[in-house]
Image: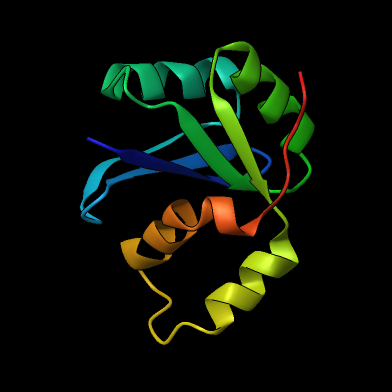
Length: 115
């Protein structure tokens, strides 16, 4: 089963949403904005999670390097591109937004963080 993972990052908290290819929410969590805490949440859900995407922001470098070191592929989205894509959507609430973000990551990605 393909899983798509999106992180909504603030300075203190990270909201995690994992959806499957059918768009069903499989896991939601709100954890501290710490790489180790995020890793625990992702690994406790499933070892099948391989790709993690989030918008560029203040913690981008810290999270990207930490998650890459743990073996995840990181997709970093530029906030203005995500905003423009979401503005084109009619329904901007709930897991549909996270599904859009997570399933379209490869199309919207503008930066990949090298190790």
